[in-house]
Image 1: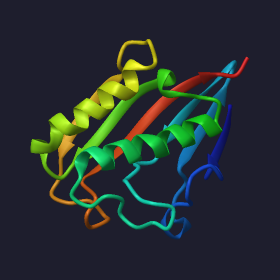
Image 2 (image 1 turned 135 degrees about the horizontal axis):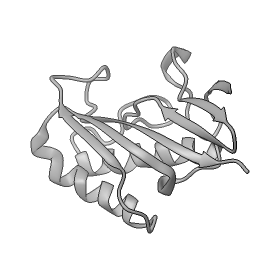
Image 3 (image 1 turned 90 degrees about the horizontal axis):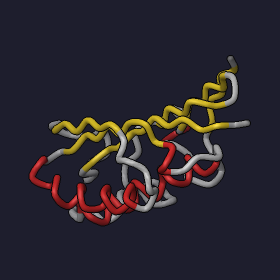
Image 4 (image 1 turned 120 degrees about the vertical axis):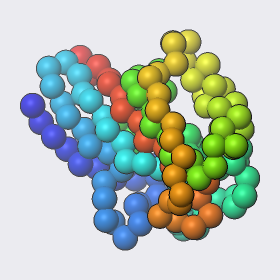
Length: 138
């Protein structure tokens, strides 16, 4: 088993380099990817589209897609999605984006957990999404 913590150049660095975007565990002919929670930020770290849950959801999945791609994975490799939302009334908007993202994979949607939280670490962020994925390396 080999473990790597990584911040791919394909996405903006985490805030203050305080964490890794992905923990990768290589085992046998594949790898397990555990992605840190992602919020909708631009390349400077500013909140993307404050107040627009649809735009924030699209941006979050764009960032996640970049992290996955840097490790040879895609949304079809995602096993589990965990979502933290500041307002579950926004679930329909988020759900529509999420369905579009995973419908393109041609695979069943991944396991999922969604919870409402009082706030996220970045004021203005409406949601934070983390995923676990498995990718074959041989």
